[in-house]
Length: 87
Image (cartoon, rainbow, N blue to C red; front, side, top):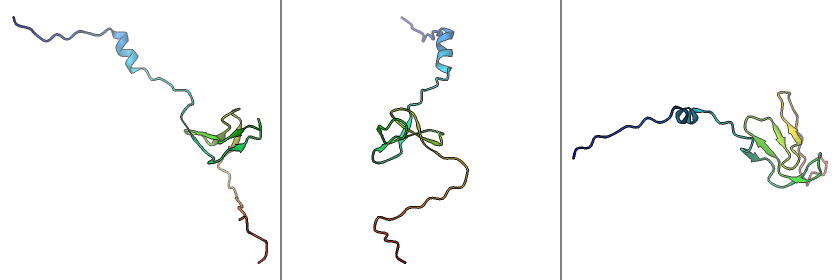
């Protein structure tokens, strides 16, 4: 008995379904703070979330904006704990 390979044609809508772009919800994020901080909006403990292509740090409980980074120049001042102010 001779057999020949057979190629079956898939229904067209199966192929178009494979080519559709699926938009994922905002669930890809990284934690910003190592330790928990208190959210100023909901007063709950959060480590903050930063989503892809975002310039905001978001509370993981209430989705309030903890910090927003913009293009304006900023000055940060960090004091060490043992600084006594003497020169």
